[in-house]
Image (tube, rainbow, N blue to C red; front, side, top):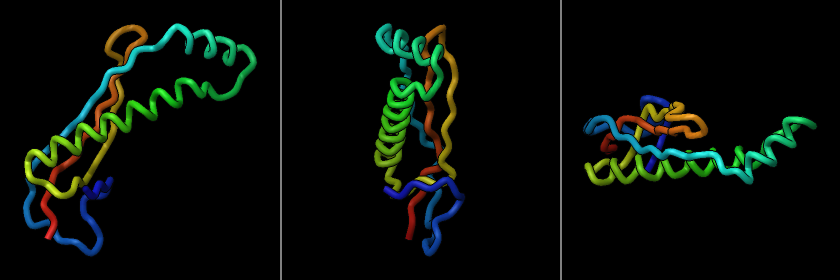
Length: 104
């Protein structure tokens, strides 16, 4: 599956536009991570526990978006984007979305 943030794939022609596809996941903070984050907040620096958690959440959202596109017969996704929103205190949603297409 080709995924691009641009509206087209260089060297390829879009034969068919299928439509929007999406994948999401919701992640909550973990008390162990919160303790480490609190310590890092005091001394400064990257909060690697949250960085890893959000990277995993993005990958999961992408995988779900790809599954949605494959079910609809697409072989590529263009104009792919991420959005994040807070669902409740200590929980965030990562949404990956784009336009499913069939490339020639």
